[in-house]
Image (cartoon, rainbow over all chains, first blue to last red; front, side, top):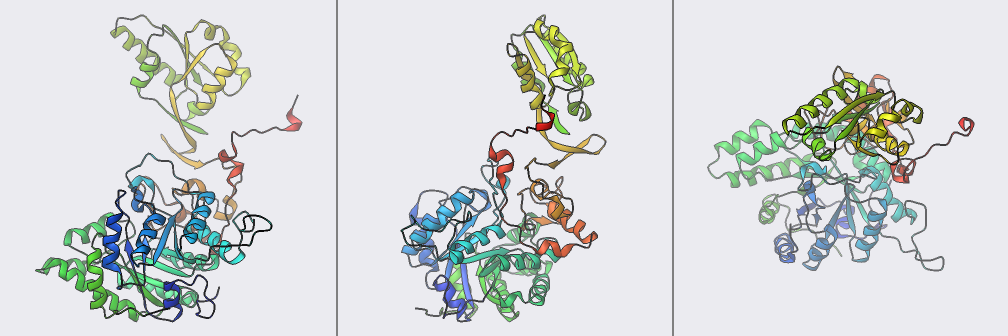
Amino acid sequence: MSMLTLENLKAGSRLEKVLARGEFALTAELGPPKSADASLIAAKAKILAGSIDAANITDNQTAIVRMSSIAAGLLAMQEGIEPIIQITCRDRNRIAIQSDVLGAYALGVRNILCLTGDHQKFGNHPTAKNVFDMDSVQLIGMLACMRDQKKFACGDEIRNSKKAPVVEPRILIGGAENPFGDPLEFRAIRVAKKVAAGVDFIQTQCIYDMERFEEFMRRVRDRGLHEKVKILAGVTPLKSVGMAKYMRDSVAGLSVPDSIIDRLEKAADKPAEGIRICIEQIQKLREIPGVAGVHIMAIEWEEKVPEIVRGAGLWPRPLVE
Amino acid sequence: MITAVRKPFAEIAGMLAGREKVLLLGCGTCTTVCMAGGEKEVGILASTLRLASRKEGRTVRIDEATIERQCDREFYETVRGRVAEADVVLSMACGVGVQFCGEVFPDTVVFPALNTKFYGATVAQGVWAERCSGCGSCVIADFGGVCPVTRCSKSLLNGPCGGSQNGKCEVDPQSIDCGWQLIYDRMKTLGQLEKLEAVTPLKDWSTGRFGGPGKIVKEDALP
C-alpha cells in the first residue's frame, strides 16, 4: 500500500489532496435527519462550510432510521460540503453495497468510510434482521478491488458490456478504529488489516483518555502503519457533566477520565468549558506523531464546529484545486 | 444438540382452543436433554392443560407419549394408533420434529409446543449456549476453535468491533462474551496470534441457509 501522493491521486477528492499535501486535515460529522426534510441538511451544511475539509454523512447511526447517507451527501454537496459517505455492513449485502458505490460515484461522491455498523439492538427497529454479509475489513477490500482492480467482488470487470468501457468508482477509502475497544493488543492489528485491505485514511472513535490513545499510536507506529495510512483522531466536545458521564458509563469502548468530569463540574459555563477542553485536546493530538488530522463529532452541536476550528488555530482551511 | 424452550402457556392454550383430543408428543433426544420437550416436560404440560380445561368446565382428552426421535420415520410406528385418535398432535420436539411429524402423518394437524432456539452445548447445569450456526463451511480451524460466525453478534471475520469491552459484547454485556476476545485469548494461548493478522476474505454463504433449504445425499447410504 502506498501513501497518498498529489502526483498519483486515487480519487481526486479535496480530502485526498489535503492529506497528500501533508496538511493537518479536518473532518466533521453531518447526521442526516430522521425525516425527509432536506432543509435540515442545508442548515447544517451552511454552518460547516469553509470550516472543514469534508464531512462524514452517517449511515443510520446507532441503527436509527435516517435519510439515506448518499442522498444526504448529495444535498450536502449542493451546499458546498465535500461528503464522506459512511457505509455500514449492517443493512446491505455485497450486491446492494456495490450498487450503491456505483451510484454514489456517479453522483460525484469521492470519499467513502467503511464501517461494521452498530447492532440493530440499539436502534429504533430492534426486531429487524441484520445482514453482516461482510465486515468492515472486507468492505474496504471490496472497494479497493473495485477501484484498483476495476472488478466487482465476484471478479467481473466493471463495465456495462464486453464492448463498453470499464468505468470504475474512484473512491478514497476510509475506515474507523476504536482505540478504546478491547482487546487493546488487537486494535493496531485491526489497523494493519485495514491497511492490507487497502484503506487510505482512518478516523478514530472520540478520544478523552489521551494516555490510552498514545499507547495505541505507539503500537501503530511500531508497525510503521502511520506511514501507510492517514490517521484522523476523533474528538467530541462535551456539553455538560451529564453528557460526560453518559459517554463514560453508557457508550461501550469509551472512557472519560475523572479529570475531565472534574473540570466540567467546577466550571461556571459548562458548554464553554467543554469547547475549551476540546480545543486543548486537538492541540495535544496535533503533537502526537502519526496523527494526520482530527475528526470533530459535535453531536447535535454542529454550530460549535467553526468556533472549535478557529480556537484550535486550524482556520482558514487550505485551498486546494 | 438442537435447543428449544417451551412456548408460553397462553400461546399453547390458544392454539388448542376448540380441540378435544390432544396428543402431546415428546422427543427423547435433543429436547429431552435441554429439558424442554422430553417425557418429564410432556407430563408437566399435560397436567397443566388438564387443569386449565377443567377450570373452564371443558372435557379435553390429553394423551401423552414420547418417542426416541421425531426426526426419524421409524420411531413413529409405536404411536401411529394414538395419533389417529387425536384431533391434534402437540409436538414437543424442535421445529424439525414438528414438521417431520406432519410429513409422517399428512392428515393430522401438528402444532409446535416449543420455540426452537439454536445448536448449543450444555455449558452448566440448566444452561445451554449457542456454538454453531450451520453455515456449511466450517472456519473454526483458523480461529482457535472458536466460531466467529456464531460467537460474534455481527459474525465478524476480521477481529472485534468497537463494542468489545472487558471481554463482553455490547449487545448484552451481562450474558454475551465477546467472541473475538475468546478467539484472541485462545490464539494467544496456542501461540498463533500471527495467524489473526491475515485478512479473511468474503465468506461464501451459499453453503448454508442462504443457498436455500439444505439437503444431504450420501450415495453409499442409499438403499
